[in-house]
Length: 292
Length: 269
Image (cartoon, rainbow over all chains, first blue to last red; front, top):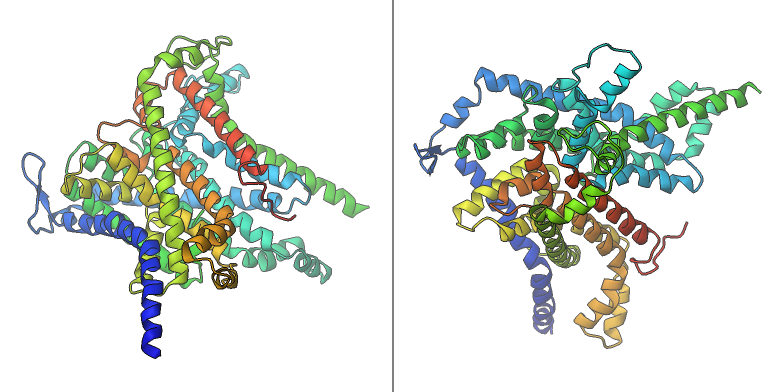
């Protein structure tokens, strides 16, 4: 009897399990795990004079990674990513709060209006910023016309410009988790806090922010990490002055043709990601709130 | 009295802040839309020279741009389809069955979501070149499927978490086999999650720049064409196409939101 049952279970479950889980397993192993392992292998290789990859073990790429020039760019990357995250929180928090606490039907519309801009290709939107901020762009024309300035102001190619572009690209990833967290907030707690005599500022720091910190954490992860890799933003708005680690990697693969060095630089990004995600989990963060 | 006044001031500050935020969010898009109607002929196409539809007409002569847009649509449709099928099956299987390596699969799902896209892009490039897959449509589709599948799975899984297994048992007890039960019971219940995942996969695919940039070979997609044109100044017909795409997506999503595409399914208020 027992045996018969297990045979039935085998026929009953193995085939459907294979059909359902098989394709995704193949995909994840072949197109996610294998490529990443291969990047690790390549980071220990070198190139010959024709830029072909030579598969012989060497650690020289890693010794190049600590050069002062590169160190400066890592610092710059962390600074830009940090500033981007902070600005996203400062702008995104009150904004999500207002939208999430809107009571009437307008709420859905306000929410959709946040998402609509992101259906236009990100490159063209960043280019829109360059057009707006350029020497003969809209902003400078306006400032000249109003005689606020007598000469066009150089807005472009500064750290601040790149941060602006990054904030612009990444702020939805901050707003969405914040919105979710704030929407769950129980309004009666705020009333209770006020009724018990707490001033609004105290309610904010002792009730609202602690209860919505999950949104701040997951939003920060989803802004900080991709920011390090968004090479096109610093290309278009930073004009080479605000290179980040993403730009270094892009160059190794697209122009300098030193794939092993590019692979080693990517390992840094992978490590940074792993460390931050581990820290996020330690702080009680839920991996599922990192999706979209 | 004082309280009412204070509330009023608070409201005004909120409205002002939100207006500024929406201005910030819509600013670069208005540049794109405005320049698509700008009658200027000289680069860098900045100053306003009057209203024209010329760029929308000229767009039809820009065959390489239209072809790139065609590629983007083919890639988006094919990879959304594949990602949705693989992702839906995977979500159901992972939810229902116990198997070796389940933890690994669950962990791997998060990689495309958290790792910077540039790393995924170069990793795929190196492996495609190692196993000699010629880069082009095929590698673009493979890459897009791989980063879309996790998002489909997360969407379907969210739907599965409130799923009652007993209705499937009831279906089988009443004599339906596994396949019939899957198509008649499981799929309809999961449909909103599947639709949400597919829509997300589609938008991720048409907007992807970074990963496509590394695996495209000679094949150009619309975002890559934009990237190419940025060096020399984006021409107004690119703005015209972008405007058309924006209008298309807004219409598509408005339809989905109003329930026409999602089969009239509406969440209770």
